[in-house]
Image 1 (spheres, rainbow, N blue to C red):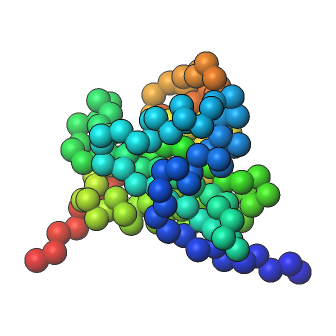
Image 2 (image 1 turned 90 degrees about the horizontal axis):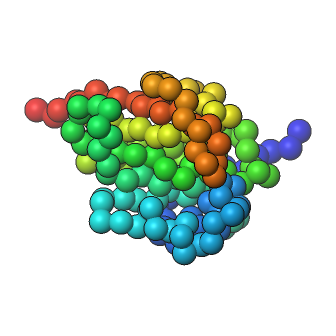
Length: 156
């Protein structure tokens, strides 16, 4: 039986996400354009999982309101990707959970994303729910709006 090495998951710079994001999500996009939606004025951070110093999974979290929900302190998950050689081993889940811990530091109430339909089972496993109609994105195919709420726990 082959053992799977546990990745190191940590915060990374946006520029570190770009090669994997381009390879997995948008091979048609040049790297400078791939950076733009992730490096705006909103609060944001980026999470990466590494095995032997190779970046194998990424996710970006951006503080961004979606008018579909009334909650304040919403965060958008964007650009989730796992290298094809490392899929289905739980690495993406580790990245998402690390991101959840980070956004809870900002007292997040809700995280949302627009997910490719083929990724829905993954997002459901980490607690997301779907809402609304499927929307077809010109360059990346059909997507579903997903969300996960967080219950506020206040220290006394």
